[in-house]
Structure formats: structure tokens, C-alpha cells
Image 1: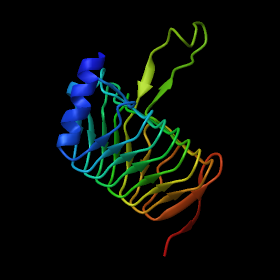
Image 2 (image 1 turned 180 degrees about the horizontal axis):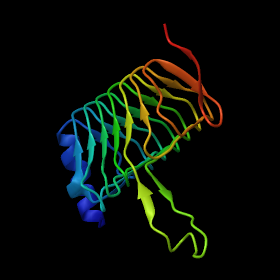
Image 3 (image 1 turned 90 degrees about the horizontal axis):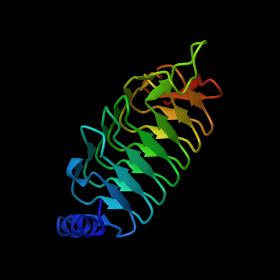
Image 4 (image 1 turned 90 degrees about the vertical axis):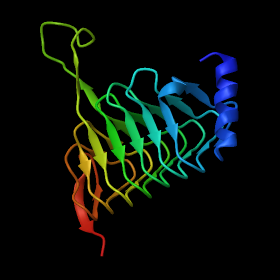
Length: 186
């Protein structure tokens, strides 16, 4: 986006009650929808240039260096979602995150994976995109990784550093590589 469009987008969002930093990176602003009271801090990035859109509910916060990329499937963040520093949300397969979810620093939510059959380079093979669904009131601990095709139920907790390859039931607490259920929230 050229500088004029970036400034115009930021000013329009500020008039609508959102706090979008002038040093945030906004690409494909036509595909970005913000609810009321959103905060996009300095150096955060939102890229909707190759997607059906990036939708942020009310009071969503993207902290410094958070990166939300709509990709081919788009991204929807429910009300009061907070994405912490250095986290990535990639919507190639589509990502839907429920209300009141907290995403710790360095979390990776990647909704695609490379194919790797022999006989040809990995780079030349297509990617496989699958949607990720994260329920409401979920906590994703620092540096956890959520892989394509996973559904995480409401109220679940993913421990720091966990790699989630399979669905997580509601209220489960998971940890490890690969993530396994350790207990349930009472």
C-alpha cells in the first residue's frame, strides 16, 4: 500500500475509535475489517492482499511484531482476542479464532503444510491448506505451534512450546511435542 493510502486507512480507523499505529504495516486494506476499539500497535502487520479478508472483532489487540496474513482462506479474530509480540497467524487454509482468546508471544498458527513426495523438489510441490478453528477463551502459551487442520475446543490451554497436530477437546490442558492431554480445567 502506498504511504498515502496507509495514512488514510489509519486516520479512518482512528475516527472509528480504533488505535492503529502509523508504523503498523497494512497491506490490502480493502480486505481488512476492524470492529470497534481495536489496537494495532507499532510494527504489527496485517496482510489481506491475497485473501478473502482479515476480520477483527471488537477490542482486538495486535501487539508489536504480531503478523496476521489472510492468505487464501482468510482470518477471523473474535472479540477481545489478543495476539502477542512476534506471533504469526497464517490464513492460507483459513483461521477462525473465538472470543477472549489469548495468544502468547512467538506463537505460530500455520494453516498449510508443504507436500514432500520424493522425485521432485519440495519447493515445486503444492501446499496442502486446511482450516484451523480455535474456540473461545483459549490460551495458547508462548512459542506454541498450531498446525493445519486442527480444532481447539473452548476453554483449552496449550502449554508453552507445545506442537499441536491433532484436535484438542474443550477445557483440555495440553503440553509437549507432539501435544498430549495432561489434564482438564475444572
